[in-house]
Image (cartoon, rainbow, N blue to C red; front, side):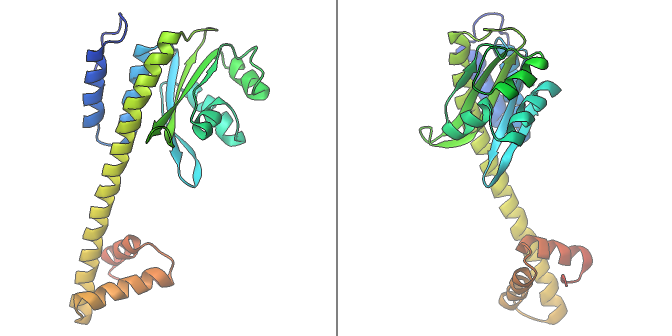
Length: 233
């Protein structure tokens, strides 16, 4: 990741350079890693991390600057409550001034304070005027009352950059997967056309039937045929 001169308050130039880096990141994991590292430099935090929302499944911990962050995240994800879960579900920022005195999630707070984390700032990554949650940027400090109003403002700007970058990276990955799937299906159709002397429509129908009968994704049926030269049982 590029180094940013953040001895002084975060400049527009620093965010501009971050935007370029996020745009050039090759995938979602690299994108959120850049966000976490920037947060570590730009904000008054000891650790940072990003957890992403996965439709129909539990949130995924994608980037952490220290294993402690993974522990803090997993404690919440496993039990379905905590500031990260609240930030993700309610699309609202959660600030904990001191985990030793906060009473909203006492069991979680006791475990987190035992890890040495005293201040927590969880900022949702949202799109479309805040209606869709991409994930949560988690910021953690070993000191109580570590996050100022300026820190929170910077975190919100970073979250907006991160939201757009993650959504873009996900879209590009989905498009790449779709192109890859079409290539695989095309190769598999060619094998069937040559082996059974059928046209393209018939070859595609065969693949589709095996996909439905075996409850297997079409691209996986195609991959199996390419790898083994056999259709799945």
